[in-house]
Amino acid sequence: MNKTYLAVVLIALTVGATYLATKERKNPMFEEWKQTHGVYYMTEVEEQYRRIIFEKNVEIINKHNSDSTQTYKMGINQFSALTDEEFVSIYLDPK
Image (cartoon, rainbow, N blue to C red; front, side, top):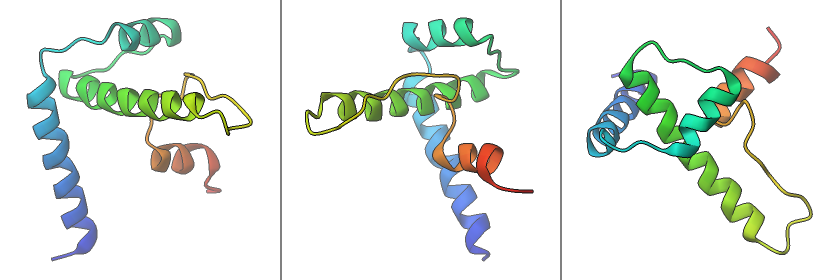
C-alpha cells in the first residue's frame, strides 16, 4: 500500500476520532478568532478539524510564551488554524 495513502488514512481516522470525542465542545477563543478574521467553514467536519488545529497551536503558543528562556513571544494570528505543513505549502513553497 502506498505510504502516502496510508498516512492520509491514518490522519483522517485520527481527526475523525478526535472530532467525535470533542463534537459538543465549543471554544470561545476559536469562535472569536473566526469572527476577527472573517473565517467561515462550509462543513461542521472542517470546522471541527480547524478548531482542533487551532487549539493545538494555542497550546504551542502558551508553552512557548511561558518559557522564560525564549527571546520572543508568539501569538494568535490569521494562520492559527493551519498546520505547519499547510502554511509551508501555501505561503513558502515556490510553485
